[in-house]
Each structure stands twice: as structure tokens, then as C-alpha cells.
Amino acid sequence: MTASLTNSPADILKFQNDCVRTGQVEPLGRMQKISIGPNASWSPKTQDATMQKFGRFIELRDQPLPIAQSLDKSMLLVCAPLLHKVSGRVELPDLPDPNWAPGQATKEEVEGMEVVRHGVTVRAFPNDKDWPGGPVTSNRVAPMVKQDLVARAEGFLEGTNFLIFSPVLRVTFQPEINKRMTADAWIIECKHDPATRTDMALLVDRATGEVHFFGGRFEILGSSASPR
Image (tube, one colour):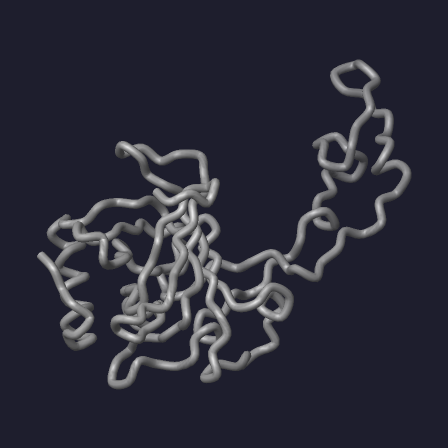
């Protein structure tokens, strides 16, 4: 089963869906983060603290998506829709506020306070259950801010429900080796394809969460930046 980027976009997306549906794929692992480069067609539509500080990216956090490549290693495939695990909607998980800083700790919070625990005097700290007044964590945990999917896109692929994000620069994923997930992070480097004169784009269906990578070319790198 092969496809060429000389086919129409609809043909290529159908081919990718057929590969995933029939299992004609080589699993790679779980996608965690997608970095997206500058694009003249995109400008921030909202005051997004994360994008202002770190640039345009998509962070999946505790909702990674399974990815694979076609058997001819020409296409990067996403094997599940992008759906929030709580709401079930096509949206991204929230992120810690990048501008948050913890409040100034008191002397007691740093050094602890003596309390009686099971008849024995011990030193308790703010996150302990027997801290006077109860555990204190709110001033030690960053508040969460919205990671807006639509704000990260430059618009819709013409005539479709697909949001488009381009150019994709790199994809970070947890690799699957010999059918087991490994405790590592690998990189997929995405590049311009001179043969088709395309850069890689990420497509996300706003209604269903269907996800595709389209165009460009890619190289899978290990954690030490050596080719797989």
C-alpha cells in the first residue's frame, strides 16, 4: 500500500486513514509535543501567555496520542483522534501558567513546625496533613491556563473542517521498541521536501479530532540525536 503526494489531499488523507484502520503501520510510540514554526499566515489571536513566552507549540501532557509511520516510511501517521480525556471535546489540556512564581515562604514553612504525631513530637512541613490549619499547597502549585487549539492554527484547510498548523518543525514522542514503551523522549525532525515543495503541516478536524501530518518529509532521531 503506497501513496504519492501528487495525489489530491483528500486521497492522501484517505490513504492514511486506511493504513491506520487496517493496521498497515509501523508503531513509533506516543506523541507528546509538536513544535510549530513561524508562518506569515498566522498571528496570535488571543493573549496566550505560553505562546508569548515559548512560541507556538502543542503540548499533549497526560493525553499523548499514538503515532506510527507507513510501512514504506514515507508518512507520519496519528492513530487516534485528539479528544480531551475529561470533556471529550476537540481541545488541548491546560498548561501551568509560565509566568507564575511561588509566594515567599515563611520561616516556619522552610524550617517546619513542631507538632505531636501519635504521641511523639516531630517536625511538620506545609504539605503534611498535620500542618496547623491543614496542608498548604495552593501557593506552591502553578495555576493552569488554557491551551487554545484554534489560536495556534493559521486557519482551516480550504473546503474542510481541518485546522492547519504549519510548518511543523519537530515532534517529541515516547518511543515504543519491541512492543514496549521506553522511558525516553525521541525527536522527529520535520523538513521541507524539495520534491513536492511542501513543508509538513499538522491537520486537526475541529469536529471529530481526526489528526494528520501532511506534506514535507521527516527523520526520526533518537534521544542522543542519532538517526534511528
